[in-house]
Image (cartoon, rainbow, N blue to C red; front, side):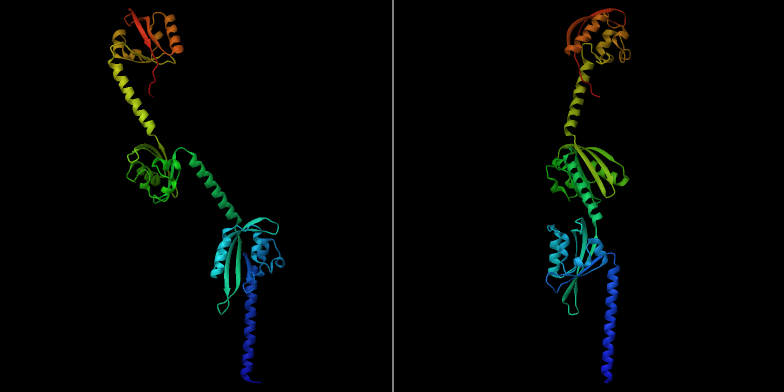
Length: 369
């Protein structure tokens, strides 16, 4: 026998043994893998499955003999309208790896979400021969994401219906979320503000009163409130800043009308106070609910002889001010029924004990808090 031929034959036998050992090791590894593994033959039409491991049988509910020879798409059933399918087609065309999540259905018809990683396998010449699919049940993860998305949608829908403006900032003061009410304050749509920086909102900056409140909320972790005038939009804004782990949320309310109303009320009260103090006739303010005196002007005090300390907190009967209690009751009844009383002649007892004939007019007024 030729020695060289003998050596080559021994090398061939050794090579075969090595390949067999490697194949056995690979098969054992795939069989013990906890992730579902499928291998399909890319050289045959429609890439039929030629191998499945036990983990995939358990995942799908199918036995190996029910799967071999089929294309993996059978797990999708009639649910073919899935974005992941197009990603797979593109990856196959480019002969690249791809990871997608698909809605698959077990043998019993139950839905599960399958995270599929599809990898092409090439021979020594670089020719595509097989595909390996690694499949993982991610149903719990997808359900949690779905529930989170539903919760976010519910929250967004709720925030869109509230009349207060709501804005959410990230840690760099970029606008992550803004509802319609907040956008309306600057006459913009929410889509125009999302992703923009803080100054785009009401022309604020971090040195403005509301900007400083936002910074304090982020720095201290405490809720901050601020009432400020925004000159660029010519509105008074009542702002509340709420800290969060990943930014700050701002609830803002346009209180321009209320602020103007309060200013007008204050001006009206100031005018009333000046008239009250300077009036040449006696005026006393009485609480309608219990007929208690709240204040009296200087002319009333001069005519009655009482001091302001005597009057405030007292009632007519306590001061023995009304000469005729029946007449007093009648006047109060008329005031409550008709809402006003003009030029009614009555007698009052002054502090000196002297009885004075007077003419009384009574009208209701609304005092500020």
